[in-house]
Length: 367
Image (tube, rainbow, N blue to C red):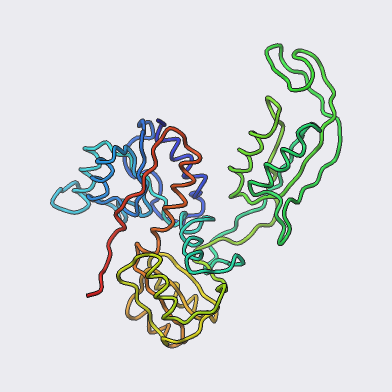
């Protein structure tokens, strides 16, 4: 069991709120952060169906991708869709939390999951840059006995990568001084005594988005009762944003890609637009509503765009530029991001059951 605040803390490390578009109503949608939670359900949307599903599975908290009351709510009229939903959530005392565009942007979120399904190479970039993931420098001090262990822990959790190189660190030997209180339990020396010990200063670079897991790995591997360490922000970083652009691992036709994704996602309404046998190599992906993404992709000379949904007149732009489109359905394009989120949450939060809703949001079927 955990407080809802613990689940929220994890979510805000996994998909930091700073990554969300301005004005996106993410975060706590309903309930109290002090609510005791035995089970959490992950879903695309808070709907009457998912709220009932959460209750039937014994979940006290619902984490959704789409905000529950997008556009606001003016009343609690239960004959209206939003009013009925709000009333049901309140009656069930359900805590509802949403991670929307921040989950789209974050590493391992909607954009990366869709890129993985499509088969993009690892060298991918955002289709639309919305910010920057800054680099940090980790500085810590480690005794000789645990130097290799700590180095391995921080590098295995994401630190120390430079282009095609990994395990990149710098270290120099020096002297550390301290005097612990009488109640302390120092790894080296004795409580209540002034000590001078040999320590290695260990440095490595990481992205700000990697800080939670690197810090956790450091604290687990370090032998000291109170390890000395700091994260220093550097001037540069890597661009982050919505969608992904990259090359396919192998060539495929437009219709072949559409069929492949329909099989993988078990999606009944996948459609494509463009030349059926068009060979594609450079592909962009965009979860959810992607009318805005069509022009971005077309202007970059991309062969095909895989998205959730788009409008009739959006396709006119694609036609003008010769851009192929694979349309998956809004929820279908975003649902895969819930699965790695569930795995990460199970690993990080013990004693709480993590469930994934079977409701894949509104699906259109071919007839």
